[in-house]
Length: 569
Ligand code: ATP
Ligand code: MG
Ligand code: MG
Ligand code: MG
Image 1 (spheres, rainbow, N blue to C red):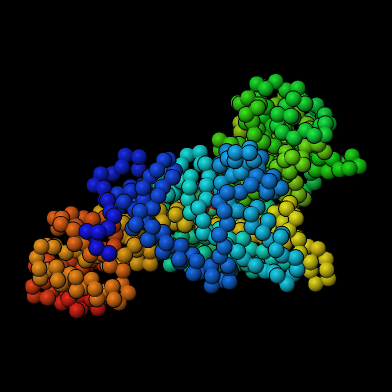
Image 2 (image 1 turned 90 degrees about the vertical axis):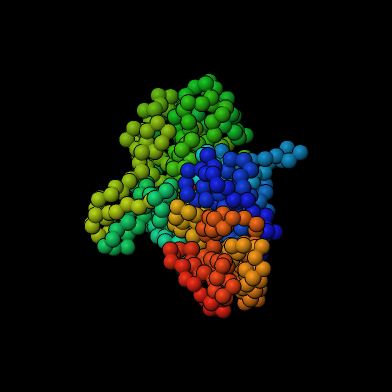
């Protein structure tokens, strides 16, 4: 590509809203273009790099046997109601209505959609295992979109979903994805660590986050230099996963009338003043015989009018602190609340409200499933205000929970996450298969995300200097830039053109800076853009000599043209 023809606009100035190097540099190189807060477009060079990252992801996913598909970003609310997430997901979910008033969302993730496909298409054990993935635009109305591609409201994600017959199959699929992720991030040139992610009350190694090490990252990780322990620092402690009956019943028990559906219905039913402050609601579920059949705690923000309150999720992560929750906590915790608040919910519940909140004691929080609860959650002790305080932080220097050596801390960027979902979605949405004995079994699922556009930002964070980006070859928009010092000089122009053509013929991706600009501008741009190899064609061209320089090194070499070409190939 010749720069004289390329649509490229680099900026000298640092855009005022940008703080992080990746944000500054991706804007200054003109690789990305902001439309509105948290929404970016990709210009020619940025798009090339993004596609290279996508291709690495695609290549490693395909090697595992996963199959690429492409689903719509628009998702009907019905599927989310089935999974219980329509009410529980919170304000990050970008909701919209069509002209008939039918509700939709712009997908922040696609568990529901993929589960829906599988429940329709898969009926026999012979069709499993299966792994489907897509590389697609996702939408999350983040509370604080910032740092450019790092936390945006529209971003590109690779999301994969595995479907297995049993836990053993899932373990294998998970391991395959884990290994594919290691290869992907290595090929992207990232220094990263897979760390155990908090999966809330489920515990164990059911989820890992892949964290690109970076001081400016929003994630904090704890790791041990003496053993393999590496985890996100915030880990909810499972106080006790056993009997739910320990919960102390609070006064004011009312049985809901059938047909009660929304939080407003609940408020009316309870005759609550809409301005009343409520810290929490505890739902108790009864079975058909009237036996107590489980609890669901749903915390709500207390400082809002009730009609604005949304049931958030059973772990008590309130709307404004949604960042404390990751997908795993959210999905695991929300299933039950959604289940009780969705259209099919509430009518079989008894609602318990403590009128003397926040003195709430012995709450239960978690999914409506055995072994998936925090019990005896006490206000003040375990959570405070709206935020759960029952999050254990592994501080720097604390003894490693595995080997006892002092724990170290690092900051990083979550570029990917793998998660064992189990049968949460398949059971909620009825994705079953028949095994060898014609027995119906729920499909066992896993989900695996990579922030493709965030990975691009993470690469820049790890590969830049004061002059600009230093792209690793694997994701560089072009491999070589030829800086033609004097385009008006016939010899120089001819040598540059020659090199350009030979390299192109050899399959090297080349930019020829043939613009009518001062050499200083060209060198500055070459450094800013971070093209790995620069060949400068200047005065030496008359003697068949050019300058060869790697972006990452300070040294330059004078080389005969042929040698420079050979070296660049
Ligand atoms: P975070 O903790 O940073 O909010 P997340 O845990 O909510 O991320 P996941 O649901 O695990 O994100 O989504 C899979 C991947 O998508 C993440 O690992 C991350 O790389 C990427 N991602 C998530 N949210 C954003 C965003 N707002 N902008 C860009 N990439 C994102
Ligand atoms: Mg996260
Ligand atoms: Mg998030
Ligand atoms: Mg995550």
